[in-house]
Amino acid sequence: MTHALSAEDSSVRLQAALAVGTAPDPGFLETLVERCAVEPDFFVRDMLSWALTRLPPEVTLPRIRRELASGRAQARSQALHTLSKIGDGRAWAWITRDLLRDGDDEVARTAWRAAVVLVPEDEKEYLAGELVAQLGRGDRDVRLSLSRALVDLGDAAVPALGRAARHPDPAVAAHARATELLRRDPEAGFDAAVEEARRLVALGSEEAVPTAVPTVVAAPGGPETAQTAGTAETADSTGTTIMEPELAEAANATNAVTTTNAGDTAAC
Image (cartoon, rainbow, N blue to C red; front, side, top):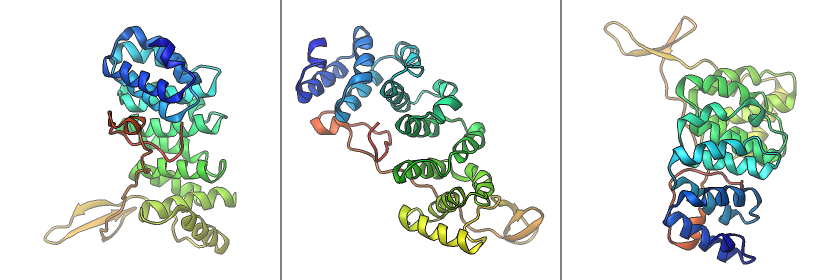
């Protein structure tokens, strides 16, 4: 089986990873982790991660944690991806600022996705601040991943986005406003949101600048109102979030295994 996991034919490697995951054995832990770091095929890597999720967390988590400090970008990225699939909240503390700001875009993107999955409620504003600090980074795909991670944080991202929307760097301000437009309208396309945000920044408009999330209070003898900074107004509904379209799981490629966790539009 170990030889099959490193076979030249990717379909053989895929079937081998499926077989290991179907009959989980901790004896394969080291081989699975090592293959994650070097496997060139996305679907095989995803099956390797699935096989790791089938092992007891007490066995897999310590070993995967070591990969987060690896000098190989793919090892770090795949370890983060696997942690997001396992979904054990204990791993949140391992997603450091260095990983969230990793110099390799793919590692950083995977760290953002994993962090959003694992972050506890009382740490969401901190995470939003870390993510907002990278607005304007990278190409379209990197910026889209960052926007989606912020949108998935919901209302916790609003204060940080509001500050970033007034950033002196037009690229940062436009990215923040585009993210807010997506938060308000999940059906809006990212490219259209970016163009609209750039227009608003150029005009100096305050439209699409996030504001504090209203606190709903009940007025005596009347309807509920939304109160923000001492001003009461009729409450409306905000905070709708979007999820990134899930990539086809490697298990679907074999029609044998289905996973339920959300992925991203780009391969780890």
